[in-house]
Length: 207
Image (cartoon, rainbow, N blue to C red):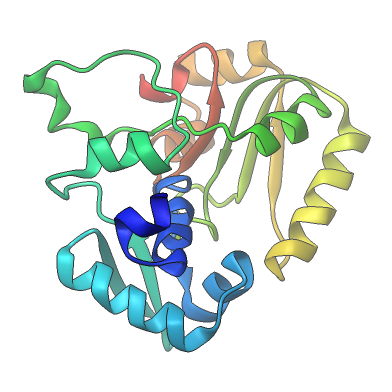
């Protein structure tokens, strides 16, 4: 039904990938691997989405990266259809224009299960290599009462999936709050950096 409405199976898979991963950039071969479609079909649909304005692209290290365009006119309704996003609050008309500047919390069922296995996760986000913003100097941030062995396994599996080495940092919630209070440089960089928020129960990443 959705495929018929939006034109093709590949296009629907791309929309789900981009809207479920706001603030993340992907290159073509990475996309084909994640959605399991032929590269020619992926290239064709990427060109269509670029032409419409649903996604944007730029080149880095001789690779073209694609990312959802959060300033697109119909971003919000498409996000509701494809994004599996759980917003923390409703935005007024005046503030909705600011959404592209704010971290968006995304929790798919698979991510919920993965994070639950790590312990009591209060905050989790992807940064650095995931968003092509090295401001933070780290790729994964996890805050809470965490099982360190479980995190090590989680990161190892993610490294195999992504095909790259990943840097990660773990804090208790009290440590994270304290570092925020003293304006710790690392935490300040994390807050300023581009990130994909998986969970933010206390809402600290908006502060």
